[in-house]
Image (cartoon, rainbow, N blue to C red):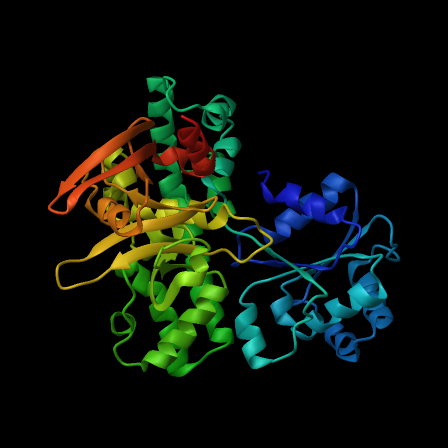
Length: 457
């Protein structure tokens, strides 16, 4: 599969003041494969070292002597001497040798002529055990997630549908046959998820049992990885956070629901590490009074989603009997799956140069609660976004947000064909009017462009 991140890596490669690149992301989202694809596409001689496996490099790394380190890498890879032109040094699984993070600084300061990429998972856990200073200002970060819905469509070799989604203009007819085909493929993505191995097995024509086995293997690997950095109650606490997603996805987090036997501060610490390690997606409440949304968050109010919808399937133990029901049209709006899908696409649609962030709005009061699933920025405007089940549903929370924040536009994702209309809600205080952009779930990655089209109209 070709990943969208490849173009970003090519741009980094040609930067005049290029710094060593550290690719962040959960295990098995495709970091190593992406670097190999970069080397192949650019004709670079790849010097790849897995730092969890090649422990013989540790002694050289402790010296922080680059010439000594480079010599060891040459002999480990057995590909001759490393040349400034045409070589790519790839330090994989860097969490296995955290001291190498310090060496990245010296690559930048002493050997800026070399192309250096490092990749790792669970870095926060490794650094908690080995608190080495990060080379601030000497490296670039690159955040990577699972295969997106758009990448999935390209991998399925659906150029006509990809072109339809990329170029559709609001107000024009949307082909019904295209709509039905996209809903069918969306169901496939909901079952397959975005972990590259599961996607590739699906593309190869394997049955669902094989795909699910791959998803379960990834999930079990995540749980097992914790044992490298925690024992006893701390280990159980980390595993409980992942298990919590089975019943807590998309809900305001209450620590007691995760682990009633642990102190809140311990759960919070474990949650922060799992979130920073990329194993869960954290959506923080923002007051939504303006942009940037991150400046108005309440750090105590947030909800969680799984890293990937396929992993969520395994946490929820989705079985074959449920598949038969979920392969009907209702599956894409069954329970929390539609919300998980949108959260995942929103979270990783952002630039890989910055740590992803996502927001929502929650009002809790004596007269009743209101919640808007997501808040997004469109220029200087805050847009409330709701994800609805089926083809209908009330807009109560959207109207409450619009009334409180003077929002003139809103978005709803469902299974209806695309439309934009003015909607009116009458209250005792008066009339609330807003322009509602209604989009099918399969257009979520085109949200920014659709907003621009609706504003133009």
